[in-house]
Image 1 (cartoon, rainbow, N blue to C red):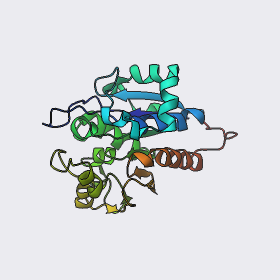
Image 2: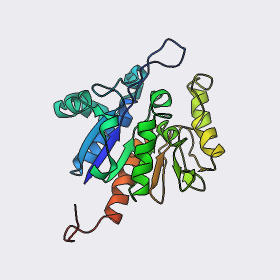
Image 3: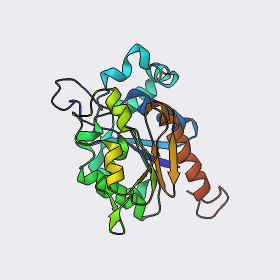
Image 4: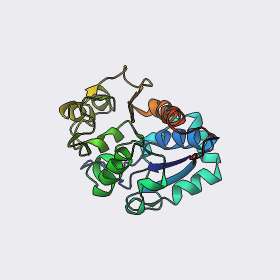
Length: 236
């Protein structure tokens, strides 16, 4: 089983002068969910190399077991330090695509033509697409059969109330919840900061950092249900 994980290369939080990037938990937790399941993981980003992590995600109050494990795992750190360039990736080489969040993707992935084309290629070829927290924002220009990919789909993502709590409502290019609703998505959410992930067909979305493990597990579950059995002639 092969999964492509797409991280941000963007490190500037709008016009605030503060740094951003991917949220460490949202990179680390899914990474280990996939690696522990024996998945062949490829990490990509628009610029390649080391993706920036959001300094806030590494504050004492935001530490998680997956992050502690990540810091002690040389192979994991090496994988993240050497992401390949997104533009060179093709859906034919993978079984699914997964986007961790953090605020960074809101600037360099939501309108990225390589990302949009890649998601459409995965989805059109019957392969799952998963995104967590702010990363469902990467779906906002993605279409399927002429309509927004999220139209009529049950979806979640970083809630307006969560963006308000971190006081970045007027900094982000758009609010994930509002945009998914505008596109016809059937938006659902749990109370702030609680784990919540939705699978609707081949589309998986998670609400916030706490949902990153659930989102990754949901993707593995979907892949296990849709792939041929190990004994099948076309197992890959």
